[in-house]
Length: 323
Ligand code: AHG
Ligand code: MN
Ligand code: MN
Ligand code: MN
Image 1 (cartoon, helix red, strand yellow):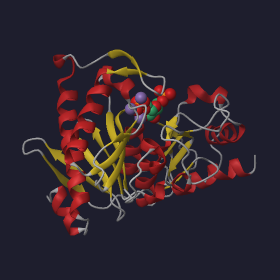
Image 2 (spheres, protein in one colour):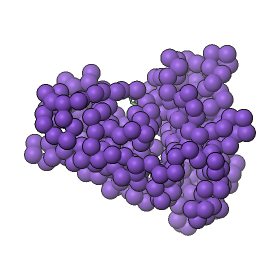
Image 3 (cartoon, helix red, strand yellow):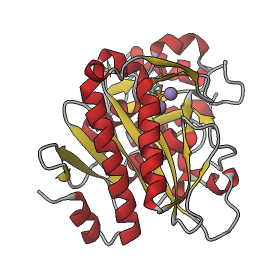
Image 4 (tube, protein in one colour):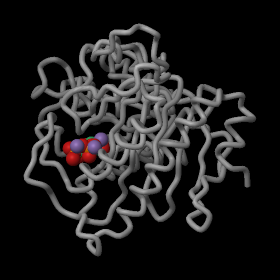
């Protein structure tokens, strides 16, 4: 099996970006190690601190964030970085080639129940302006030069796109190398498997309510009546399932968020996942616009997310169009 760096070279990826992916992969190997120590290393449970999202930070949120931040800044490759766990952007090397946004640990509520979590990252090429501030990051997701995640499950995998499709790499823990195990990920256009947190149903806008009601009634359509539901409470795991066997994932906007936002964050959750899904032949929308076309307004901006099987996303968008 081919090593990650060798595949990236073969894909013609420039050496700086290969170096950056390697740094991300190395940080995630350390996160993987800490996660798998679990209670033995006293890394479970919460801290006393709240992040800018208003969430109580888990110890591993902070450990993962520190590992990624330190390694990325030490690499000299990063002009600045943004993280779910950092209030503001962190300035790096003024000559750095990249802007990196990341969710150091996605699905934190799963840590203490030994369920799936992951690290999500999004990479833009830095322009050569001397001024670097939050606005430098605020570019549509379509401009990402790389996006991916590392999912820490029974196996640890890196799933990555550099704009030439999506490939999966399994971490060989004996040699510490990511080996390509899936060269070309494809998301089927139709599906019978849906991921949605039904407990929020009372808050949804009417279009999503109508769509789910029709689904549950087994409304005719490409999916027939074989509706089946999964909800891992870690976006990275729900998206990974979709990249492995298809499906639809949605965290829709609801009445609690008047600005038509959902829970998920655009820069380091929705955008990187949307690029992966689109590169694998799926679709990613807020219900009313494609995620990769959104002009971001701030680094912790939240959006609604409906992604996966292209025909299903189209159907959801029809419900929003005809509301
Ligand atoms: P994070 O752990 O990085 O804060 O993200 C959690 C997100 C996402 O991973 C998941 O799909 C969603 O929260 C789950 O939300 P609910 O707990 O409301 O189901
Ligand atoms: Mn969080
Ligand atoms: Mn997350
Ligand atoms: Mn997180």
